[in-house]
Length: 259
Picture 1 (cartoon, rainbow, N blue to C red):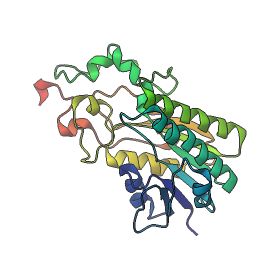
Picture 2: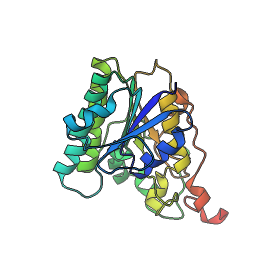
Picture 3: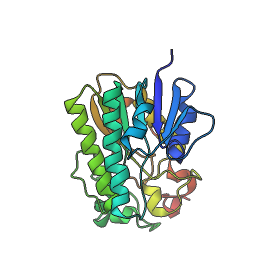
């Protein structure tokens, strides 16, 4: 029998990509506030524990992709990203789920973009190249969230860590880069932290299939962009993640003299 993967937020861009990609190997179901045709699906708000809890029964792995993002009130972000994440992890624990993969955000280190040389990398200046001696920002660097959304995503990582420590539950946190509907970077800043459809799906597939011995870890998910400053090397070491795509394929981060 195929392992069962429950996806929260399947109606979103990454949720849809994940469902279609994983369905060749796994039995997929979904949960969210908006129904998605063609899949076993529970319509429920993850902030409502009693309504969402039954969807977790029988699942082996949960991809938690549902989230609140953008310029919204703090209470909205808190309800979806903190309460919702707690509910997902508690429901997973009660249902005997083996692994929860949490979609965090690279925004938790966005504050580094205020400082050089990172500020220049996201400035859009066509003369800028990545310094050979650049200190890449790793998952071990001090977080620097710049807004309510990033703060709640950082809290969600902490909740995941607590559950992995206290319970027999593998938790993987993925700090997702900028994934666009059009699958191209929309501007120079986003091009530095862009993640293609192929590369985010690769990260999710590898996380689902990772060894049971991986109990907790955090990874950046970005493509191999010329001006990237987020270090994905630990994902390569732990999962075999190697980005295929690059913002350079779309003209971003390529020095003027070599265009």
